[in-house]
Length: 260
Ligand code: SF4
Image (cartoon, rainbow, N blue to C red; front, side, top):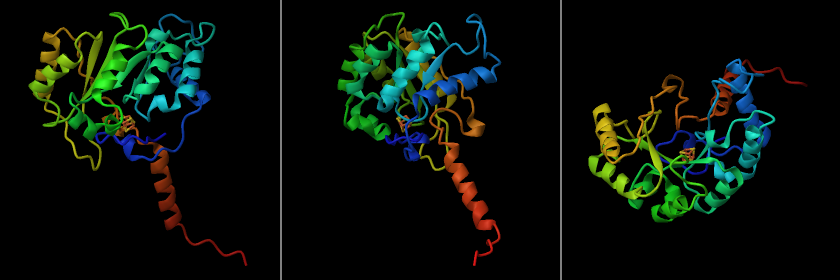
């Protein structure tokens, strides 16, 4: 809950890290979702909950032991049995942990990239100062098991006038050359106080067209959950809001009689 990495486009990053989720809490999220979908218990066929992505609230590779243990449970064939090929872990690029993630979990890899040069990525994803793009790309190329059927997903948030030009789309194609990859273009979800705006739709489509011409699948993620601030990068936890509303209630409550 919360995150220490302060990516500047991300609402979650404005919330201080509270603590890491335990293995049980991660697995419980899957079970709650299945329960909500009426799939608990259920046969393994025709389930609606078929894919899982670890993302949106903190850096999974800073909680790798619990993430790996949760994946072992979720993927166990005698239990929930979601295939490891349908489980994706999204990271902002903690380079030293990438080999371990691949070896321990065999999960699919997603990278929060968002920029094609170090100067811009350092601004958007400050972790880039520690692990610059060249090091990150080398670690991705060495990720265990990469193939055309096991591609890396690159996430690229579309920020108006910041990273959305056709030149940047071409630079992205150059950067990913030789990596089995797909690219998720994410329309930016504005949140109160953010310094960015979402790229215009036509700009996003132009950007996607450059990627498509180079042979990359580049779906534009349909914004969902904007109205409840629950879309990508907006998962600033309810706990903070609850704390604020509880504080307000206390402030408004009549003063309790003193005990003496
Ligand atoms: S994008 Fe991910 S790593 Fe960056 S601040 Fe948000 S939650 Fe943390």
